[in-house]
Length: 276
Ligand code: SF4
Image 1 (cartoon, rainbow, N blue to C red):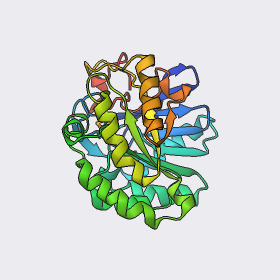
Image 2 (image 1 turned 90 degrees about the vertical axis):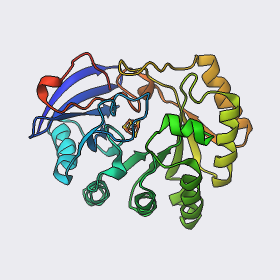
Image 3 (image 1 turned 45 degrees about the horizontal axis):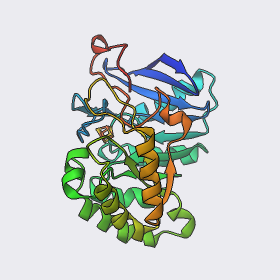
Image 4 (image 1 turned 120 degrees about the vertical axis):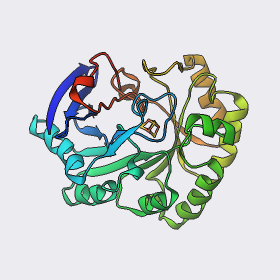
């Protein structure tokens, strides 16, 4: 495994991780100590706003490849204290991710992950696993919008059924480690009715919701909403009783943000202009 730094802008540094079979994924170091790594070469979930899954799935990474991303960035002199499996790929489609959480805890690194929620049996396992944060990407309030935004993720009804069963079993401190995410995309999920439907589902769980601004990518025609619309969505969800956080600065910078990282199957495919 080799590492190439492809961008150093603002608070974030983005790396291309070159794997032994010639494929590559990307990793981002946030604020010098929090590392976002990839779990798959590509992704099968197919979110239409995302560059990571634009070419479909090639394969999942091994435990050695997950740990290797961490080791390689540390070897560059970065003191990584937190790692999140939120880069290219759906973590719950990668069998090595749950063992990776255990390995991180053993190494005194705080691990977290972001998932679209499926398979649901593995989501149940992951909720109870020794993570330091699990964020479920929902991105919709109605089933038709969910099917468009997260095409090969679980539907909202069974997803919220699992959350409704598993979250109350957690201690209060563990419940605070589970959150929902809503990436606001113009024309896809930004209508008031969509936000209201999401709030109605989410309110009973009592979890935090991360309301993300969207960083557009060259592989998608989708666009972010205006800042005014983003703030109005935040106010609407808050007024509906949800605890909502807006995107931090590190996330809205060009190197940050869900769905902007790129995987390539072979080194010759690498497009240096592509952004994750
Ligand atoms: S947003 Fe996440 S789950 Fe959706 S296609 Fe991209 S990497 Fe996969």
